[in-house]
Amino acid sequence: MRKISKIEPILPAAPKRKKVAAYARVSRDTERLMHSISAQVSYYSGLIQNNPEWEYAGVYADFGITGTNTSKRDEFNRLIADCEAGRIDIVLTKSISRFARNTVDLLNTVRHLKDLGIEVRFEKENINSFSEDGELMLSLLASFAQEESRSISENCKWGIRRRFQSGEIGVANKHLLGYQYDEKLKQYTIIPEEAESVRWMFKMYIDGLSLREIADNLNSAGVRSVLGNKFQEGSVRQLIFNEVYAGDIRRQKCYMADLLKKNKVPNRGELPQYYMADCHEAIIDRETYAKVQAEMERRAALVNPTYCFTKKIRCGVCGNNFTRKKGAQRGKTYVHWICRTKKETGMTCTSENFSEDELKRISARVLGLDSFDEETFNAAVKMVTVCGNGNLEFQMTDGGTRVWENLHINLTRHKATVTDCFRGKIRCASCGNTYHRVNGANRWVYWYCIGKRYGYKGVTCHSVNFADYQLRQISAHILWLAEFDEAVFEAEIERIMVLEDGSLTFHFYEGRTETWQRV
Image 1: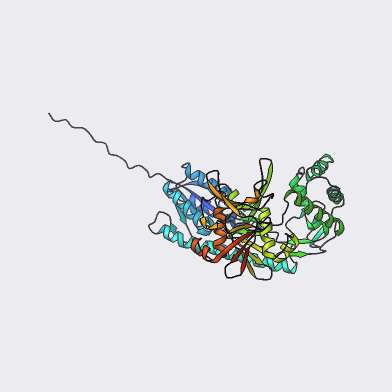
Image 2: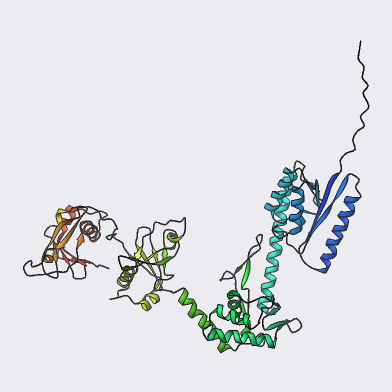
């Protein structure tokens, strides 16, 4: 028998309402824009609540915040967090520029929300992030918004710098310890009780107290910063260094390095500064202020001392400056100058190091001096470049260039060469004896004056020894050869005289002489 069952009609379920939120933003804190953002909040609240298919999820509004980055936009970040928590399905916003002026931030955020299944609608541009051409249009229009922001920023900077030049612009710090800025007079006016604390601070510094000691004394006396905080070393340094206390103002000490990052950095010559003297009544007389600046320089020199080659030697391999390195080994102190890159973690440089004594000898030789003179060196030499081959290129202050050629005769690891053509041709100028060859530690060969043998013909000599490879390189240099050639040496060089200072004079068969000067 057939079994018959009844199928009840299924009523269509009511469509689930979308949870809709809106985002609004204005970049400046003004009364006019406050009304603007209030109007946006009211508009979107009514728009969402009057749509029967939508469920009101709120309006998020940032007031007085730039759109070039998202880090300080609290309401924007709260919106994204609620999206990630599943509380929002659709986000409405007036325009791309209100959502973000940074193209990268915009696209990354829209893509992130799209991956979460959340739609973003831009009213002014009529763009929907779920549409096929939505991302392309967003990329183009966001780029325009970013460039518009950059153009506005440059125009504002230009206007500010023009006002800097004319002295029209006010100050950022309305209340500075000892001063209150008067908007009507357009200048700082003295706060007498605070000014006494400032004078005390300067006096303590001139008397030799450290910044830490000054801060402790101020705190112990109950003196506080304009924000009501205790003083620290940094805050004391900032106040003592401020030219405002001498009655002057320096403009554009800092500047915005990147429009998108909004990072303020010290102006170290990248942009012009404007110094306005006698702008207001001084708390500190100029003589006292000058004493403080001189004391600051003196203390800084003790912490970061400068030397004869500081900022004078540059690496020709990586472009970094050379720095002084001091060390000790077997009870003896060694001072070398090395490329700063070699001291940085994870960085390497192949440039050659030089001992400080060696650099002084080379500089004296290049400048034609009997001995190194720092004053003469600074006056004559603008920069010394250490080339990749070890040569030193001296850039002179008169525009000329001089080169010291590095023969690499002082290598850390000696070359094991043996040269027969030097036999009988090397003579000591001090005692008149010839140089003999000997094997050193079975690793390298050197030449020494036979007069060094105690009692040899009644002579004791202290002349310089030379490694075989050193004589080969020096000889090749004198003969203008890329590599030493024994046949050429034997044909042209009659003898080599070793001078008392270790220099070598080469006597040619043709009668001329040429000297290699040891440095």
